[in-house]
Length: 325
Image (cartoon, rainbow, N blue to C red; front, side, top):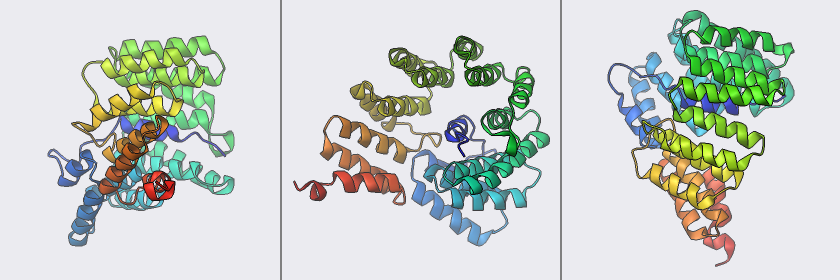
């Protein structure tokens, strides 16, 4: 069962609500990519105050960054239990269920998908103006089969409501619907309309680039990525995402390296964890044959997040010992 939950990771990049009126120390650590330190701090705070929903929320986000879906779900469930009237807590719980569903077999995924729908619908009911919850719910309706509550008509209904709340998001959802209907001309027009509605927002250029990549229009993808990185105001997370997209597509790897290095030069943000940026920098360096530099990048990732297994596996693959050098 595939619900294409890569979407939830992308959506999460666009919405990391403030912990409180002031920045929590763990948020500062997450922004710097120091995930291990953030998790340790949050656990120490929970030992002193085990009923703080906000701390569990941050712990959920930290594990979400790690792609440790079980731990993310555990923390998010506790946050939602302690603060059941919070749209934010139900949104992140739904996202965590969604990512675990994507990594599970069919039977487990079906049960989790029903929980995703329930949490997203609850998030919207609790705060009808939560545009991120509506966007996530619309994408769920579009991608999920009818057996778990999906349906294009439901996605269209959410897009209509979003049009009055956030025009760019509404155009993006309409673009996704058009793609599902194989109306690629309309889809492209909707993605361009989202860019216009957001006054050239970097994330909307990224969405257009993703469309071009899916259609294998790779030259246009690269052009859209350049526009995303150059879009004012500068959005650090867009720079990392653009670099990652080039690496995934195997296009202009030197440019990808320069973007990822630019991002890591700072400031980094929680929306794009620095340990992930180091991982993708290592991937790019591998592609150009610079295995020593790649190994250094993977080590840097692990210094920030020792449990990031993707970096650990990559380091083992390119380490000098394993290469017999």
